[in-house]
Amino acid sequence: MTNFENHIQTNRDARTMRRIVMASVLGNALEWYDFFLYGTAAALIFAPLFFPAGTDPVLGTMASFAGFAVGFLARPLGGVIFGHIGDKSGRKKALILTLGIMGAATFAIGLLPTFEQAGYLAPVCLVLLRILQGIASGGEWGGGVLLISENAPKGRLGFFAAWSQLGVVGGFVLSAAAFYLIQLLPVEQMMSWGWRLPFLASIVIFGVGVYIRRHLPESKEFEAQGSKNENEHVPVLELFRNHRKALLQAMGLRIAENGSAYLFLAFTVAYAKFTGLDTQLVLASVMAAMIVEAFSLVFWGWLSDRIGRRLVYAFGSVSLMLFAFPFFWLLDTHQPALVYLATLVGLAVCHGAMIGTQPALMGELFPAKVRYSGLAMGHEIASIVSGGLAPLAATALFSLYKDAWPVSVMLVVMGAITTVAVFTIRQPKDTD
Image (tube, rainbow, N blue to C red; front, side, top):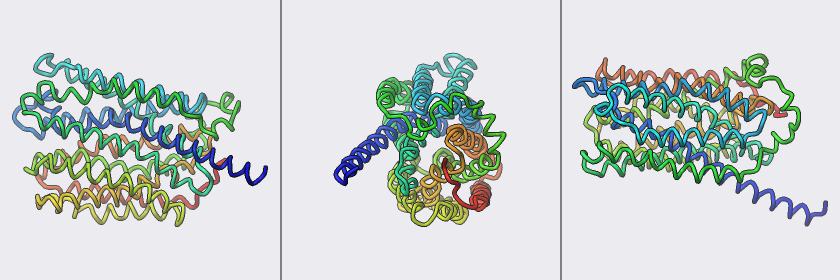
């Protein structure tokens, strides 16, 4: 091949990579918008609408977060189902299915009757739809990561893989913005019909997302496997039989990243409500911090290509341990500038260093034939404890002690577990 032909091929590959990144990030953001809607609603409005608990708002919020946790219990099931489809039939096919299930479940939440209208049938239906959301999200993250990382040029895996996380950040910013806007309505209107609008918007998101994903190219590494994938044993069985250590390492990496995210996001909004801190201020500060994190996580991914993934990831987990107590001290000042500082450091620095490095570091633990299943199971099994139960446990601790220090201890413990997991990964394994 001549230099000119090489140049043409390089430009063509670069254009293809840009299209994969843009389409994958946008599709991912639309799906995570659906999933995060419940988390924000659980902190702000679902307690009186679906989980009345006398006059104690903390107990009502705990019941609401329990429904939030149920979605996480369903995520490993989604990891098994869509990991199997993704490893045997293709990453793209799995991602189209996850988006369809997520869109339908979220739209249906917007149509549900409240406890006042339907009694206990209302929270039962809400929890069932949350389970469907959990199943869909259990297969989403791994596929979104692999469509980018398995097409990334050599030597730039960390940088390009980090872009896949923008979908998670974008989804939360969209959901937080939606609830920020509906809170501008009079309280009566917001609680009667305004809260439904962000959920009903999912019907539009579903159409756009499916169109985007149908036009994505398949992963190069999956296509290179060819017929091997069709004859492979059940991927999840292969994973538990031959890659148990890598699976445990992936779960350990996830503990601090996922746990801190949901404490900084979902619990922080509830904490503000309980302590008299303006919830709109907290939502605005979280949105601002997430926007900054969208840029910082790409930087952390780029840095991991330069100095090593373990070092960057450990920086994030150790920083989380050091910032666990100052985070709530800053919130307790009720000073807007310090509230913004707390969420900015917590998300863009501590959490950003981990989430920006995570796709590349986790993906290097598994061979391509079980990589979708490995990412999905490692990601989602850990999310049950670190993500689903974290806001519920934090709310229970706050209810018991009437103080944030036990929640800070939770963050320290999570950071320690992840730090240990990072240093058990001796060196990145060669990927097929």
